[in-house]
Image (cartoon, rainbow, N blue to C red; front, side):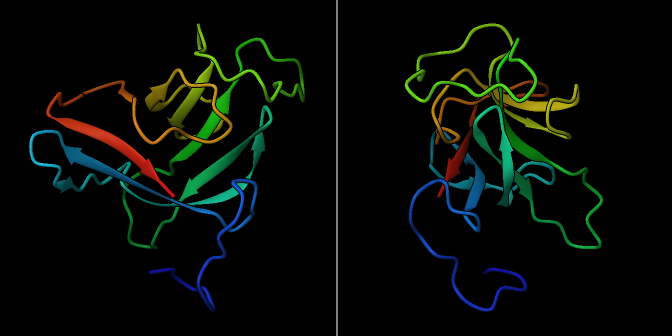
Length: 140
């Protein structure tokens, strides 16, 4: 469901404002979704960072979990630096897609070394308290 929307979110290219991502943990053995208070839920697009979209998790007033963003970070990028669109190889150092409290902040939960133009569906490394029987997935 789309809280507060007057109709369905339009489809189209990954660059659409109004794009929604759905984040879930899936039990590897069964494929069954497992809820997580902090990371799982729906994320709305709200801008860009380092040439890639930024998303923020939807929150309800009673939510106690911290705010979460999905964003791309290019290590060593200049102020306002844009990443070349054909640069979709694996990233090194701190570059890649992140789940974090703030864009570029130190409080992070998961990372992908992908340099794709949008957050990858799979291949996320959960930074702390990882359960190897669960896989973090991002879907459009």
